[in-house]
Image (tube, rainbow, N blue to C red; front, side):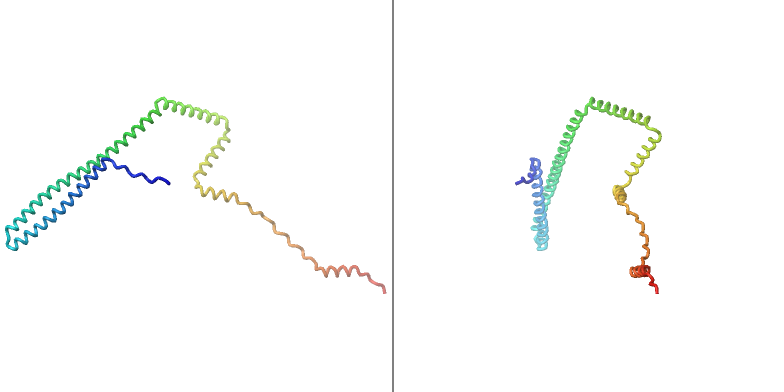
Length: 215
């Protein structure tokens, strides 16, 4: 049985970010509760004031004011948590980029070791020698071939270039047309001369063979 995909490795940084996000969620839940208390104390103050209980209405408003102070503190805490989570996540990205740069530098160093100055100079020398050899071959062939041969070579080169410009499907279609067998041309047979019917020919032979009898 094959092994399943390995689970992603959870680092200490991941645990730290997760804990901060959990605390942030708790603060948000606490803010919702405070908002509910603020709404309730506001309604209580209105009801007590309508009933003529001014002191109770004042007490409800004081409680509401205290809850508003707590809500302001939780807003600051929530902002700090968001900033901290963002900073940690961005720092992890920077670390990942730095690690990638380090690996890239190691690869470049390895390439530089393989492509040192001596290797580059040797490669350039070999390339120059190959070009010089090719030039000598071209000059020798140019001096050996006649003008007609050179013209034929140029024509063949042009034909190859023209063929390279033709799409592959068109070249295959033209090749198939060339491979089709030619249809043989036959001459129509000459009309046969009408032959004399067999009975008439037999009768003619009988009259020629008949010998007259003397009286």
